[in-house]
Image (cartoon, rainbow, N blue to C red; front, side, top):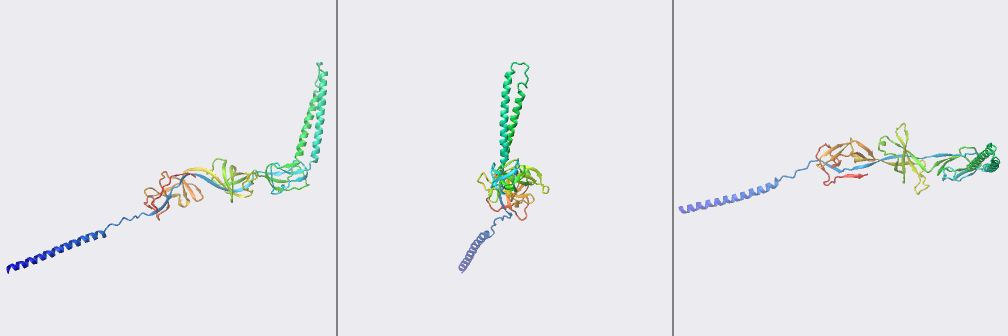
Length: 390
């Protein structure tokens, strides 16, 4: 009986050990599972970038050729009153001698009755012939007198007829001059256009008797025209040395070139603007295939000015209080202030920063600060090098 009792105790103890071992194994597995799953749940998430976002564009740094936008009215450069240097009756008028007519240089506009002046030419021709005959006669007499008085030591100039010959020569010169004047007057019975011209006025008619220097109409020179343009004080420093060639002149679809030639030497009393003159050759295109421009037309002109070197060209919308925002390579905002050198159209020109590795910020955070760390909207942005001449 004692042996059975020991066996029963032994089996009971063994079962307890096996149960305890099973519990330990299950508990270890559960702990391992908890460690594994717990590690996944407590993994650290990536750090969030809280820097504000900006939008940038490359800097445009250039050597910029300034331009002056001017305007004015095309005017005649020269005008002439039509008048004869003689008096007489008008017997012929050119069909183009009307208001708006265009005549070429050397073309006859009007003629006076030439009868009196032709008669005068004939009279002067006769006087010249008489003077030539008188001189020939006096020369012959002088030759005879010279032979007769050849051996007389007391010969006088009067005896040799030298005064008579001199007088005959003088009368001949006077007759020649009178004939030249008569021929000139005959030519003056016709009025010739002094240049390619536009007739702007005519106040005479066929058969009218006119006096010397009486105004019969008016011509304006078509060889060239002028535009008197005002230039403000803030634009004048950008003018180059005169004359300035290749000035672009336009009106609607017409484009021509001219030359800014001179300052008129006066200022407008109200605006204090200075007036300059742009010359346009052959405005009515009489000698070219260009489209004509007309006197009185309002024209635009673009004049090349001086070149501003190493300047920053930015949209005017980005310039606030004479400053722009830049972004450097370390993604730091920089407030860059510089005086505005010039404004043209929708952009401004300011002196470029000494270091050119910046980009221009076109969209800022709500409250930008100098030195603020930011991030760009796009990851790959190419920095601009110094631009070419514009």
